[in-house]
Length: 411
Ligand SMILES: C[S@@+](CC[C@H](N)C(=O)[O-])C[C@H]1O[C@@H](n2cnc3c(N)ncnc32)[C@H](O)[C@@H]1O
Image (cartoon, rainbow, N blue to C red; front, top):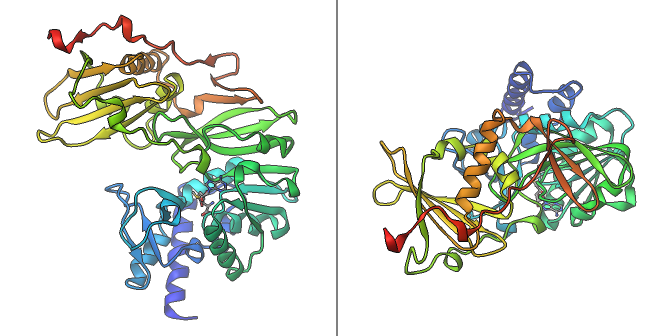
């Protein structure tokens, strides 16, 4: 064995030990995790997410092999493709479109799947092939089918799997269709997020089968991991198990609103002005904000972005209506402010809807992701709190005609 190989083995064993000690490795997964190291599945150039800055950095094995291996053997998510493969060069691209998730998240998802010997599994989103390799190691190659929409990504995964001595079936296909040829499955795991659960997945699960999938709304980037059990009649229900942050199924990505289609050049135009005391950090509180997830459940067809650091350090939260031209802007000044200026325009008062949803979440005791659940039928997705008897419905739209703010022109 070369010194580099030995060092890689040690680094991987260290990570496995750390995860086991942290209780992040579910029963039955320590052996596959040790036997199938993630570094066997990663490309020479990759973009790990720095846990301190949250930014993607480049790791190039050809230039700095030991640095590359440190990232591969860390509990960090690693982007492996940008912009559906259109991106060139080693600098990070625009949109991450394939990645290797944090090993602790992969373990959490596999734990939620509750696999047992002899089960047949469909994975949607092959990516690097690492989770397909773990599943194949645990259950056997013949029990695992993995589908990937991107032909190049799928081929790279097949190559890595073969080099690692695993041969699950990897199919290049749009995973929203599942893979009927090998159905029914006992378990389906989507390692890519859904906004709507594709009916084919439920149709291809055996009655009592389990679907694990990151699910969320278009409001923000805060998804939750759903663990749904099928009834065998095209319906399924279950709780969320915790927060998750994933790239979305290709066809379910939000076409990002164009700012200029909403906000007039003669800013702020006919916008109505008011103020808010809702602190930015309370709602847009960083990774895994439950408030953000919960607000998204009640404010449908709305997306937000944050434009950071104007000349005076003010951050602006922009909200856009996805079914009309409503918009809102909240100006978060840096220090010493407890009231923030709000501008709203269009048929909806998006900020008032967000505030109402946030108030509701606080009033009911700030429940976290795992207190919500989801029921999927052929016609609808219904979110609930604690039990299906307590549905969480979209708030009534706050009408721009009955706004409580002051028209800017009058102020
Ligand atoms: C987070 S990565 C999956 C990580 C993977 N399980 C691993 O072990 O590396 C998500 C993958 O889903 C794929 N994907 C996106 N939309 C898809 C679709 N409609 N059908 C199948 N795969 C899709 C992406 O191309 C990407 O490779």
